[in-house]
Length: 287
Image (cartoon, rainbow, N blue to C red; front, side, top):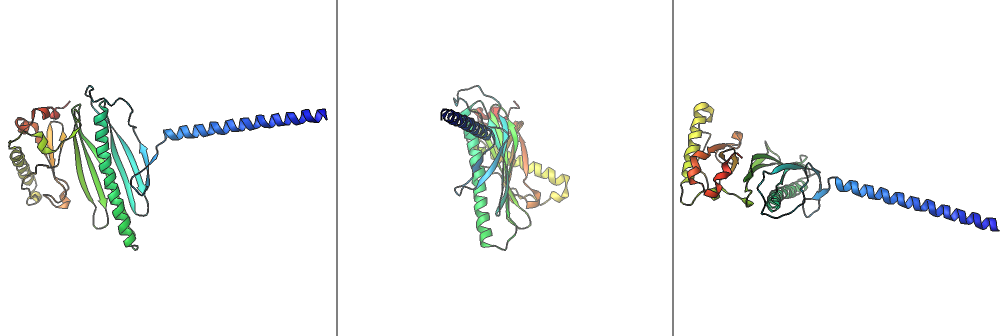
């Protein structure tokens, strides 16, 4: 009986030892899995219906002090690619990710662009889902893509042009360019009229320069004659900054047929510098 008790006790201790090792191994695996997944790109929800998309991040937003009183710096521009493909919509979204030493401006700029892109996606998805449900025989899915171009990046100015493209059937898709022009010192998103002093004739000056450039285009190529129906710019006219230039552009069908694309006209700083508000003159600097 004594030997039996000792043998049973040894078996119990062996069992407890093996069980302990097993639990430790499971916990270690669970920890590694959780840690590795934290480093991977997560999925995010773009709308209230919780339709998830995969986010592949080329650059993560850094954490840090959000004190706005910092030395000005040139932003670093990364990107996130969001891919969505289901029975209603195909979508590839390349979204800019701005990193700057001024964390308040960084956050507000990223949030504005991100919210606009997600709003575009949500609207496109809702329209695609509704149309294809109402028309079950329709085999072509809708398309909603977003891409961007960096036009200017200095310590005082950031200008990014985002293209929103949709296709919902027909001969061709439709696209719209939205430029985000930011005073990186204050975080303000600028409209054209913001740049100029009150009671200046900046619109007339820009109008004349655009007319001159159109005349040059018509002179170079006769096929351009009659294409442009330009009457003048608006106070909130589309524009972006590039080098020392103000580039004015127009939406599809605004002043030309679809085939002409989006017309752009570069206005050199020298033409408008005397009319610029003093605080915005250096937005046109090269550095």
